[in-house]
Image (tube, rainbow, N blue to C red; front, top):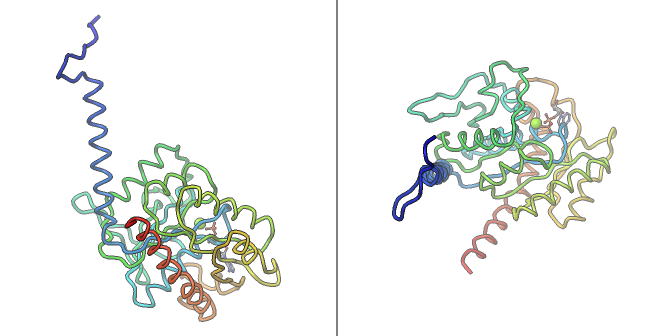
Amino acid sequence: MNEPERARPGMMNEQQRARLESIKRTWQQKREITESLGRIKNKIAVYSGKGGVGKTTIAVGIAVTLARQGFKVGIFDADIDCPNVTKLMGLTNRPEVKDNRFYPPEKHGVKVISMSFFQEREDEAIIWRGPMVHNAINQFLQMTEWGELDYLIVDLPPGTSDAPLTIMQTLPLDGFIIVTTPQALAKMDALRSLNMVRKMNLKVIGVVENFSGDVFGYGAGEDLAMEAAVHFLGRLEMRKDYRQREDEPAPVHSSAVRREFEALLSRALPTLETLKQGVQQKLGE
Ligand SMILES: Nc1ncnc2c1ncn2[C@@H]1O[C@H](COP(=O)(O)OP(=O)(O)O)[C@@H](O)[C@H]1O
Ligand SMILES: [Mg+2]
């Protein structure tokens, strides 16, 4: 048996060398992520404790409405398990890959990067463990060439488990839009996610209530905003407009939905600005 390599003064053993290499790699990755995200002015996440509350619909609605207002917009579909932004956008193109960089395809004026681009089949289940999620997210962030963007909207996975946590730690998000439905139980879940954002020392822009109307009622969104002392950004009524065309975001063809998203943004964007100024002041202290 070989004798284990002993550390001599001034010399590194294998273990130390490997550790140094790994630190160098992480450092390099961090630098590349910072560079890739460097020309994005605002990064907004859409988040909630539950699936099926309309996160993707809202992330896409916000992105498309901002693009119609003349902003440069991208959307990052970070829902690893159910990446369906591309479906909702009706996007069939894949990113171009050149010199190890991803160039996101564009639809309705929005650049899109999604975990679904790397699925073989649409119905394929994606079951990834924590470290793999971490690596995939890092690689996406490292390799995507967003160019200059006013807003990057991030569609987060639901819940308070590993996957959203990883993304919150990796992507420097400026603020979170929390989604709830009008029922009391949904409010509890949304409150959990709101508290997680705060625990991570990140900022909540406000709460949106989705599926408001005769079927599910009204109110949980406003209650939650009041309880958590954050802004209520508005309601999105439950409408058939979302079903009208399966592969086109509703704000593109429905003026009623468009007006709701415009109202939502007219409250969210100034709040985001105020939050960012607060952070800058703190850094400057
Ligand atoms: N306000 C609404 N009115 C009617 N249908 C909606 C509304 N918001 C979302 N939906 C529909 O509900 C379903 C789930 O929405 P989705 O955005 O995929 O939720 P999540 O991303 O939270 O899982 C989709 O079929 C979507 O079209
Ligand atoms: Mg979704």
